[in-house]
Image (cartoon, rainbow, N blue to C red; front, side, top):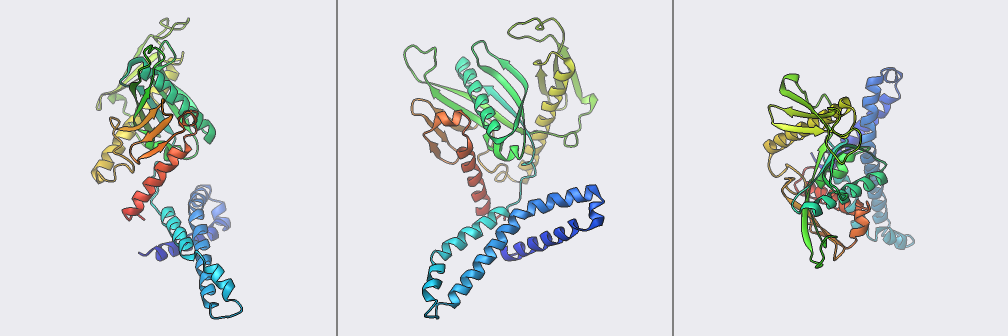
Length: 355
């Protein structure tokens, strides 16, 4: 099917949905109305771009027809100036809008940040990344809920896991999975030498109960006394929870809450998302290695980005992007990096002819 045929089909479907949504019988069926409204909203941007494209084509055709008119020739030439470029841009935009959407893009995410090589310096950088993602989420109007953490004594994290909820969170954060490398002079370094440390980030789409079925027989749930930096609650009651999924061997522990019930609920949420991600990875691998992820291999052992403090430089190695605005990025201004990754993924998909 040609691009024109596909766009015409989308336009027809949009018009049909518009008629159905104004039908009283549709309004009386809440479930059907909700489904049709969602589809109508999804098609709206494509249809608007298509209609603007058609108007541009018609206007330029009219301008060409006026080139032989002595009185209107100059006006026609003015209209035709840069016409090829404008049409190419409009067509590229339409192809981009027609790319198949990742069904996970609308999901919330479980963001896991773990200190890797580098000891305390890696743990401190894990805290820096946690702050960066929290600030970015705040700018996007998303909500951040701490699920689990393992802090160190001087402000770092061996591990921190959060739930980020909001509009199309996964679509924006899905390329953050991988190894983030930091190059800087640690506070404890008296000789001023630059050290290299690493932090692993995993972005998991939040799993609903319908996405993952957890059978009680597959789970071993242990409770134990919470450990930590101190306080009246620590080590006094068995509020911490460890859940082991026996078939996969995945283990999740939560101890941040004083309530055993809350820790159990959080651990179950993390477990569901890890199992969901595992199932998605398996399915993607079966479809084809090339399409498993749109940017990079997605393997958590892969170094995806370097943060160089002496040069105030951030480099994303997957798309050869380098920016000299490290401080702004770490303050949450992650948009330019994510935009570049999304654009690269879309261009790659267009190059493969996915549209």
